[in-house]
Image (cartoon, rainbow, N blue to C red; front, top):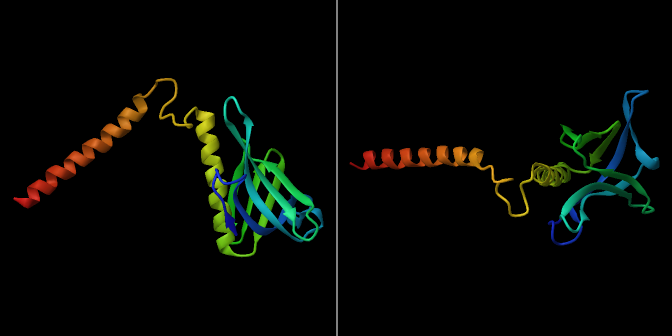
Length: 165
């Protein structure tokens, strides 16, 4: 397993796994592209330099011959499921893909990479991100949240002082 950051290349995570697809006619999972172990990564690509909007792609390249067996863009309809420690699957559009990982650690690392990509995309879709705290100047929601936290902190300070006396 190799973990990368958003800044040191073009991938968040890369693991070894068997790439699968769902065969709805039989109700089972079958290997994609003839099977075999693949290097599977979550990659980030900026699709608009002006707006700095990212796109995330799950890419699988078979180790034995470097054939690309999976290229799937993470979109708004992306649904990710961890069904077993070493098998995760997802749906986007009408397509279903799965990964059988060599180790549970690889599965956890991949899940972390996918979550990071989804969180980043959600920030972009909601208008938050790229150094912005709120969108469009509408910060009432954030003020309410921070006010509650501030009030809780003040209550703790008061109760700590009461215990000291």
